[in-house]
Length: 403
Ligand code: SAH
Ligand code: SF4
Image (cartoon, rainbow, N blue to C red; front, side):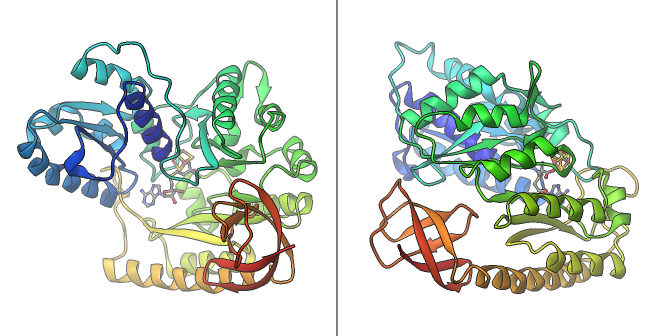
């Protein structure tokens, strides 16, 4: 989501004739897009802003914009008093209106320059399309609803326009984005209906979306997944914990069995579906037994990959402090990471001997529909989807030959 916001911000600069540079010395403006989902992310944002003091001293006319979720949480007053060299603060809730901050600094835009779409983060063939903002769920550990606000769904016409423009600019793959992306509903249309519309767009080779929430998958979606091969054979479906007690305390809205049942239904529709997930370790009150339930879910869920995070308190509410010490937190994380590594190895090895549809980014590298990184010796055509026979696997990469 933050990458997508950063791209949109870059586009507002491009329309004024600016270009993006990796060289801070060349930069006339710097935008720091901040995250606050965990305390560490916020701390990193703060130290990044601190380091820009020097840049600003060397270039007093340079403009510093601090945007996003930590900016929303900390507020303009706090940030500007701590870092007086910041020019503009734009919180996550106002980020679609970043143009206003540009106007405040540089004045109204002259005729907009036709800026071609360019990806800053994913491959040149992949583009993000934001379909909703905010989140209306109330997971106990999560700061997102507070900083990004309640869910709001972008109208289908706008989504399709955005998607069309990105495809026209050369994207082959689209990633629809939202915090509970499959809860999208607007003007009587459902998420699956929106998917059908996007899938009809000319030039589209593959469609992904992120992150779906287990509560919002229905039969219409599984039917669509079974039929529509352009829908990626991969879902990132965060589960957070394998313990029913913890899932309940987290207010996730599903049990372990319900989550696994959903996985079974999705895999019945798409047998080669790869599923990745997120886990939080050390949620308040998590016992040894709870953490064993999470470990066993790694195998049972057959996850291709899992991001594992140490619990980070985002509220002062009573009972929301971590109940285990740092050493125990670290030990549980290590165990989980080892289980995830071992399981990923098994899942990857299962692909050996199979044919993967790979969207190539270079002649030798691309991504399978299941989101696995794939390497071949030669012959891939960037921007084309080709069949690869997998003959080996190492770390997070499949090796194979074009067929
Ligand atoms: N909307 C997505 C998650 C967005 S936040 C969903 O519900 O699936 C991305 C990930 O950050 C979450 O899946 C969770 O694993 C992690 N996360 C969120 N809040 C956290 C916290 N307070 N401490 C540790 N990890 C957290
Ligand atoms: Fe946070 Fe995701 Fe839960 Fe929304 S659904 S509150 S973004 S973890």
